[in-house]
Image 1 (tube, rainbow, N blue to C red):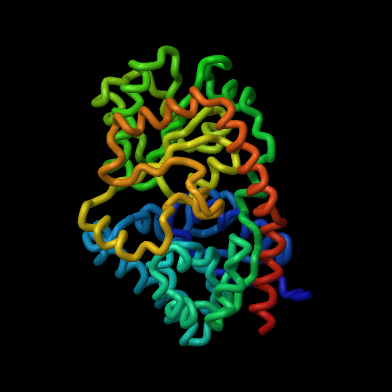
Image 2 (tube, helix red, strand yellow):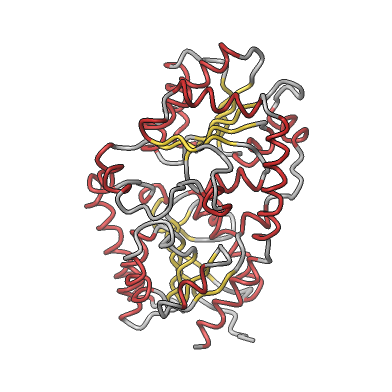
Length: 382
């Protein structure tokens, strides 16, 4: 076993989901190397574990081709400065956590200069952008995979990888306590709860939240007594509040700062943006309607690269449409409201879905912090 305690780890996690993954990985690294230090770019989960963030994580939380172009000079400048600092300080290893558009190029440059590298979360080359495999091969000494089929896929392309389980499957309980979550959020224990999760980025809030809120207004008109909860980042709370007011739902939607897991535990159904949060909802065994809208040109560019008929992770992992997906023009407020209410009116269908999601949870649940530390230790010993 590696006995060096003063290990220096550098990490970059570019958004809220990566922050959660990295926080759990840091638990494993700290247990293996109690004296370790970690720095780079991260969010609140990482900071709570003693991580030193040199830039705010929000600087990297930009989605889509068109939006990235607008922010490219600043993002490129951060990456350039970060690379220079890492080459000066030369950590034992650099670990890019998700955010492949930012991290893979950075990893490739560091690796070419002799810094060991790992990438946590295999880019979804099985869903779209298969050309990324060449970038991964150049960038990462090792890939930490969160889905069981990924290491074999990488190996066929000459890339080393380890399945470490999905960290969320370890954190989220197999049987979430809905009553406790509702009590913690101050919600009525009996009235149905609809969770609105439009995404953790400002651009997602702007594109998606208005449709979700318009759908909520229609649901409320159609079904009396519904409770709505929308979790968002503290930095996005003013914009979210303005959107709720603009939708005529002032006082009708509970806004929470973070607490998305409590919200998912509390809800009966969620209207949710495509992304990692859909897997969280599946692990909470909650029915959902997956939606996504973005800049039209961005969508046209992305859809050409799509390799599978599904976009939502629960559907991809189950290899069928177990939950509806309403994407781009299909995601009208009327359609979103109709599909969400359908779950509330179909208890037998919900029960079948919960059984499917329980089996998925069991497959993804591993001791992720320890397996991450095992994989990193092998890279350091190489």
